[in-house]
Image 1 (cartoon, helix red, strand yellow):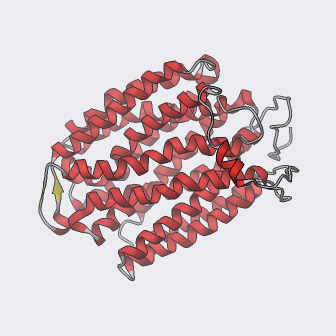
Image 2: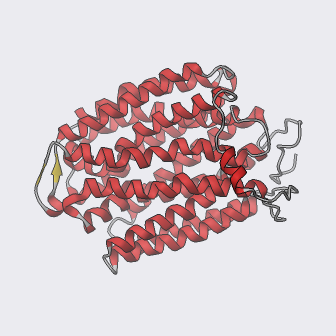
Image 3: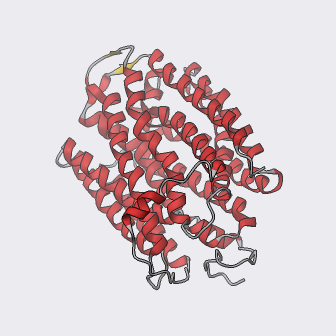
Length: 433
């Protein structure tokens, strides 16, 4: 097979893709996770602390929830429209390009909102625009693996996806937190914009799609009905969706608040947290990158469910241990254990999702429906977690505000319970081993 990445979804031949081809297919996962690794771990919590220091936990939970709304809705539209796109360059790439440009414009607005205008409304509006643009791109991009990768290589493809996802998140956090930490917001956001544009171009020109010939008009009413994927007809898809939803519900109970946790529980000094947070994230992601890659390959041999169940069980046990960490070294050890399970889960769960998709040509729409299981938990859990953290009380004023250990303990317990239910309910998936 040549190195051009043409759609194989209509062909019964199980073509073998090179590692370079897999890397190109997953390249945009690096860019978008570089973007979110820097923003969600460091920039968003730091910017909210600058703009609203006395209500930072509640405010952060609300803005994460607000931003998750377009993350919930936009992929459902862009995925479906890309399924029907008949442009010569392919059906996914036009939406990837458009989304990247909107995303970059929103990043510029966030930088100006926090540094020049110091405006909460402008900052929030720009963040929502970032979410809209990013999800236009990723809503279509999620259809690339089902389009291009043969079924017998989807475990490997999801391993590459997990590798690029974890690597992008790690490099984004390290670059912005440790290398650019002392620079002005415009420089930090500028670095993210550069990565999005450069890697977006690699994705756009590296994947050679076939022109889609379906010219059926987009019936919005019929499309809304199609979003309901009948659990009776597709029970395995429903159960994978539910288990994904539960795990992400637990994940987003703590993920937005890691920077605050390091200061309030672990005891990291505020002026050092932007360098310590990438260390914790780094150890999690370095370990999870290996387990994600090899977990995906292993699942092709022994089955998806076994790998996902074991990975889920591990993070269930490890998550509450974070609350016992009162120094950085111990937090890094627990982080490594968490990463060992989390990497395998993310990789193989994606492959499991592609395995149980309803048959047909609407993979973009169906993957977007599946993706809702990752984005809806942000909307639901982030404000609840912010409220739980602040519920036992706080001390200090302004940027010296600290929340109690009990507040963080409550969300780690919630996190573990969600992981446990996600593992248990996986037993209901029957068509995939």
